[in-house]
Image (cartoon, rainbow, N blue to C red; front, top):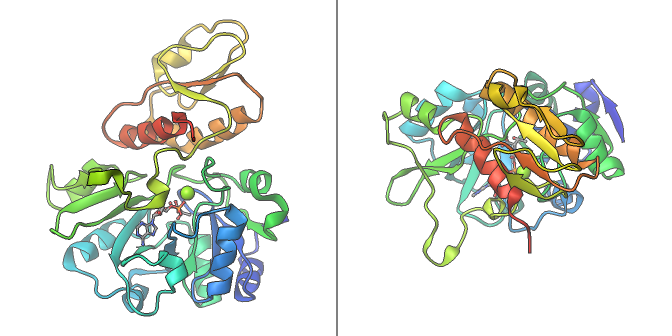
Length: 321
Ligand code: TXA
Ligand code: MG
């Protein structure tokens, strides 16, 4: 694998049907042209991702979405106009043009216009939308630097386009409408629920997805255990014993004296949650490489961006079976 900064090189490889890792403002993505089913299947192979887990279609602008969906309802258009380019993914009924591989046979397609200029430039150079999940092996923590991608996927991809560290650090917020019309957040993300409410409908409009009867999941990537390093993760306001790692975000915790033999990462020293979001995955990935007994992560606030960060850490703390 090579790491480089030339979008034309990325576009050449993509046009030839290869998978390439690209920077977004949220996390790095593993992209392939969405109109080439063989290239899309290769994404699943590289990540070890179940074929039942659909991919987000990335486009260069709102005006390019129309051919890929049945329609863009007014409420969706308002959100897109407010948040695109940016970390919002819309689930909309798909048109005939969307390959079954991209949506994993589901009735809707996920669409988003990423905020990173380099990613949009590559889409324009390729001349086709790009399907892209996060560029991690399935189930692991998402990469937020080109170096993380190189460590995680190595020779499985030919090229990583280096766009610097991701500005947001957590994945996009996925939204859509339930069959009864209820505005629903399918995955909390970089745009907090309160911001969706403020942009569209007012307080209480947007609701997190409620678990379905019988426990079926809307998106397989929403299975409980996900985003997880190999080291056990525990949500805890207290540091671990010697041999553990402690990840904190608050100003108080950043100043607290530590027991000897504990590795500490302060995601922020001032309690700034946007800063904490930018550093969370890097801290998990880098401390995971040290071989610690356990990682304690300070609990996040339950509202705003804290709700997103708390959800990721909670899921990282559930062990797979
Ligand atoms: O910020 C992001 O969204 C990043 C960057 C690369 O754009 N992408 C990302 O993709 O996080 P991925 O594949 O790691 O997570 C996408 C989630 C998965 O949980 C998937 O199941 C869900 O979106 N999803 C995608 N298409 C869907 C569809 N048609 N119906 C339901 N869920 C869908
Ligand atoms: Mg992912």
